[in-house]
Image (cartoon, rainbow, N blue to C red; front, side, top):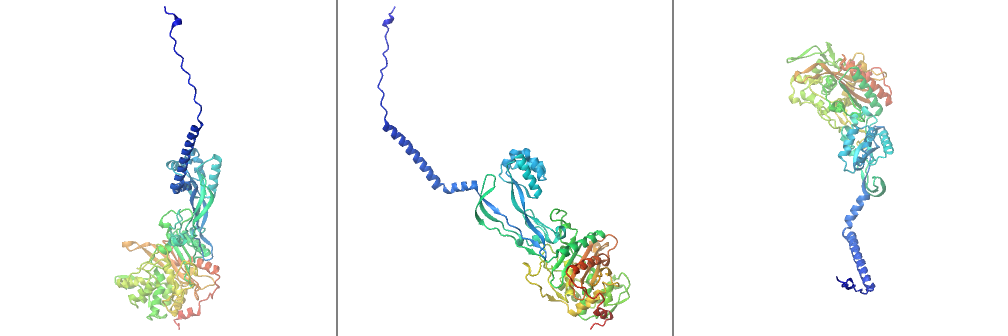
Length: 593
């Protein structure tokens, strides 16, 4: 056996001596690393500060600088005395950040309840816009709604919900002024009435400023103004708030009493042509209920036309007096009168009447016979110059021109019907403007919805254009005083202490090709007070009275009496002689100089 002691032994590894550290090498390596880091850092700084300067500035500003709108107020609309009719008030709008609010969907019912919204609808809106950073929840909320939302935010610790300021249009006159003023939409743009017609004047131009906002879109600091805000310009209307309320009350009461389809009323200032009141029925509240379509929203005094009926008879007499084909003493038989195959007759057989009697009793036959003493052109020319068939020029959207066919198309019977207010159509404002000529001694003045000497009307009192002589109009006013008397057709228009003059009209409504309806009427009255020196002109129309009575003297004349009585009191017009004037007595005797 081999001797274990003799086994070969492996040589032990040699132990080499360790090298001593080399500080110089380490320093070089460290310096190289630091130099490389410095170069990279410097390059990075250079790249960002020089190459990417504009990009980084934009990115930085996008995270804390915002362009914020400076709200501007839409112009105010006031009545002639400065009473507000349309104002813009600051309100709050609730907005959300859906990407944050989506984490609090269990809080949606509380928010919906505070805003009086459907919870399911609000939840769907939030979820469908979950990636957006801004979403209107409800614009222009009420004060109570805003307080309820704040309470819900505090109670449930809701994130992603906040407020911003906007302006909301408010109409203090509500339905009384609705047809004239109109209204705006959610973006504060005019949609109806003067709000639409003068939107460019009223509208505001919001400004723009740069601000610093925090993560919750709250403004921390205003940096600079980019563009200033421009407030809308105010409009001063010719309407008188007190008279407008009175006129609306009486018109609404009459429409209700007579179960009528609707009605319109216009009051003008004789000296200036200003519209002091303009009301319609039915109406609507522009602050809340804007439903019902054009049936409720249109301004019937300007957009709807009517056949004026007997209210045109004074103009037939005026044209004949101007051409001297009759005198106040001229007399005419009023028995039924045939024109071709047609017969003209009065409600009663009044026998023979003078010109004043024809006006007093509203004789169709007498009016036709007076018209036949003139050519077609003579009658048409006066109607045309009075403004029939032309817009009044008040600048209201949708104003109707009415209808006045050229005399060259008339036939003999149409010439006759034009003398008692059939065959042509006018608006209530056109009729009032025509009566303004009689009240202003024959001068036609432009009518306006704006106060004279205001932004939209620089002239205080326009001179106007003379259409009739002073002598003719004064004779006519005296004749028309007899209408508003116990012997006339408008005794219910008598005003205690004042002399009033006017003319009734009762016109059947057209039934299309079938002619005229036998049971549908429009009751009209137009007149002025005081008769000696008129201050106010008024035209009122009740559409389709359905309670039995339909004559203008019974349905429309009482409205004239109540409204004009109030107007005379409101404007401090002194009473005149309640007895018939000496001129009237002379006219009745046919002894006018």
